[in-house]
Amino acid sequence: MAGPDPLAVAEIAAARSRVLSTIAEACRRAGRDPAGVQLVAVSKTVPAVRLEAAIAAGLTVLGENRVQEAETKAPLLAGASWHLIGPLQSNKARRAVELFDVIESVDSAELALRLDRLAGELGRAPLGVYLQVNVDRDEMKAGFLPETLEAEAAELAVLPNLRLLGLMTVGRLMGSAEEARPTFVRLRETSERVRAAVPGLGAGLSMGMSDDYAVAVEEGATAVRVGRALFGARQVG
Image (spheres, one colour):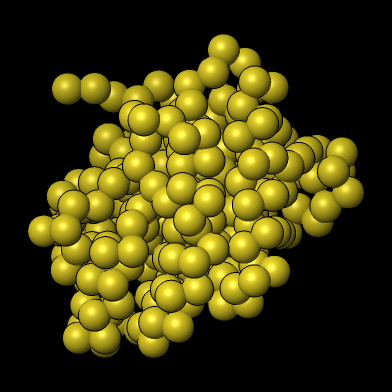
């Protein structure tokens, strides 16, 4: 690529500034340090040329939903770290370990064991992961259940090639940001409970997206996954 378009860089930098200001204001309300919140720019369907501008604008942590899409972009872009934030099929696990710096969507012990083995084989240890928790017990969502997480996390925390950064959840689609607050509270409380018994589980909380990330930050999010507020409406097709 010839280099980022200055107008695109300026546009995305302005959007980034707005999002960071919203995070900072939410941190002020919650008595938190904004430095404790990582902005993951959701780059699903965003073309590589626009992501080149995003990186130049300071968005250096990119979140992709699909391994296949990341495969086409990552080789073209320097200066970014990549998070997998969408579901991971077992047959894509090897490629995911090769491509991604963090896998946020570890939704079962079986997947964690596979990733641990692959991270060791591929020289990617320790691979940072989040355990995805279905705190709302939504039948349409994957993830560990809160009532079994403690026992499962204790087994996973001793795996030699994974670093359990914390917990992640995919919230329900709500009519307002405030309606999402109970989900974020449940994830934070689950984290506090499980970490008291499993010291190897990190304190990270990946929760909140474009519609509700300010509320998520108020409730303790350490990573927010924001796409539309940075890049505009998602391209489809």
